[in-house]
Image 1 (cartoon, helix red, strand yellow):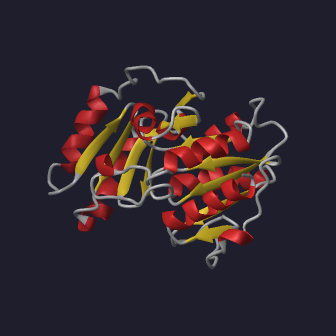
Image 2: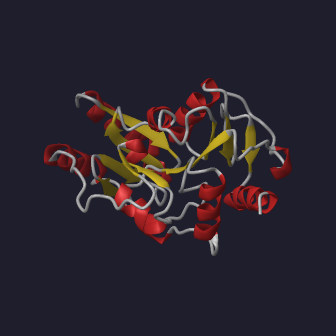
Image 3: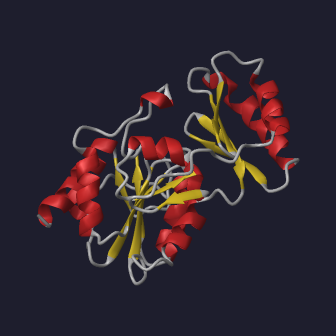
Length: 249
């Protein structure tokens, strides 16, 4: 992985006819918050995404680690939404199933036991995925990572993935790279080159696949990345997205 300096929004090449756009949610379209329940799109964001979806002829996906029901409640329903790192996908206009598949009670109990000694650490249940947030207790990071990695090693088909102030216990198949690859087989996406925009470790999986398929990635924020370009903040992402809208108005 390589460090890149920030790119001008006008220096990132994009074609609504040639590219497919994949956008992470938390940390990319909205700033990270201590409480994930408070995260939302900026004013006018839903309208911008809907306009872009039309401009890209349907080749636009919001791809998030959030449960699909949570993601769908925070984003416009007339775009593609992939929740749980791609475990569940809703087509434009489609509503998600009312209930998510639930993680095994035994796994949940063990994860709760692991976090019990640490104050201000909480578990967010996202269907088959557990997100352990330690933003309010950063000193717990390394012991939590070690314990949760050990737990995942004993669960068939699961892994622990380290992100920004979060450790996720999730199925191996919950992978944004896999989700992007599968989406690119759909009719709206065939023949296009993917652009993946994201800020965290889970987004690097999709950035890698996008690059392999002739597209590229955009990293939001600091840190090493496989992405060709970098935007400093979600505000810069929106500046870029609005520039695309204005160019094709």
